[in-house]
Amino acid sequence: MTKLSKLLATTVAATAIAAPALAETWDMPMAYAATNFHSEVGANFAACVTEGTGGDLEIVTHPSGSLFPGNEIKRAVQTGQANIGERLLSAHQNENPLYGVDSIPFLVSSFDEHEALWEIAGPKVAEVLAEDNLHYLYSVPWPPQGLYFRNETKSTADMKGVKFRSYSTATARLAELTGMLPVQIEAAEISQAFATGVADSMISSGATGYDRKVWEHLGFFYEVDAWLPRNAVFVNQGAWDGLSDETKTVMTDCAAAAKAEGLARSKDYTQFTLDGLKEGGMTVEKASDTMVEELKVIGATMTEEWLATAGEDGKAIVDAYMAGN
Ligand code: PCA
Image (cartoon, rainbow, N blue to C red; front, top):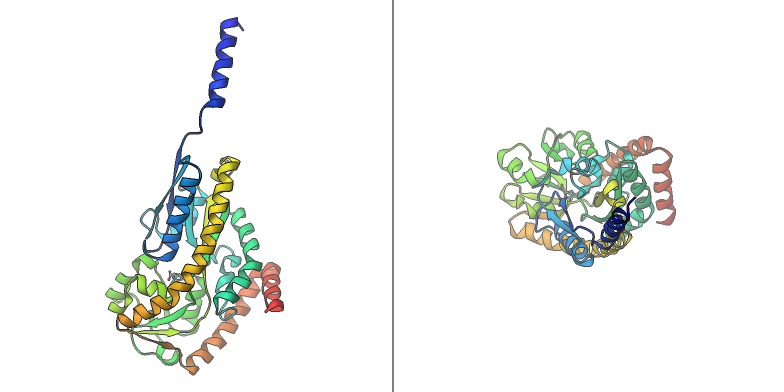
């Protein structure tokens, strides 16, 4: 090397070290309404990361399935079409039964029970996500799931042949076992599905019915508290590995804050949205004893089926949960 080229090489190397990291923007697809608490918590998380990294990493949320529809978000992040995203985990139970650990009927019915289950199941689900090339950041439960119908429904006898909007393997199975006809529809599409008669019922939280103003089409919501499913936020593994340690720490801290905020917001939204359904004109009440008894029998079948597919890991989670509760 000549003296000059040596000098140049040293200068170039020094400049490279001194140069600030290039600011990056990550799009974050989300499936639910912008006004829903999951989406608002996600937006706060995004702002926390943007601020915490001094703008080195800006995260921009895209709610309501506007960037990718809900059922494409996980694959989009796995393949790096988006670096980060939020998705309802149980919608992927067909890929791995552990994604449906939050949808075992009547195993948990309250936020506290659900959180106790998630303490045990969460690390296992994070491992499954890692096998899918995803780094798990945080997750937030939906309020307890109840049944929506266009018409008054007192028992499974009234459910026969009713068109049922499903969002997961478990919800479709519930429909089959009650004699209903399941059709998988994303939350962003349900108002249209109810308006056009593609579906006449669903299982969901008061939150989703409220967000989508289903009182314009449906008359009844029955509190069943069947389970509390979870939305998770995850990052493409390669994108995660490419972050500086400082940025990873910011993200992890913002994720912990989002998890806590999300849980509190989900609890608050529960009664607020049930009241909203009533104000919209719906009958909101506890399911009849007959309906509850019938659903419990169906729940026992679904629990057995889940345990049969989830193997040792699944059984270990349920056993550990039962031992403590
Ligand atoms: N709302 C979501 C999932 C569970 C819930 O309460 C939905 O209906 O798609």
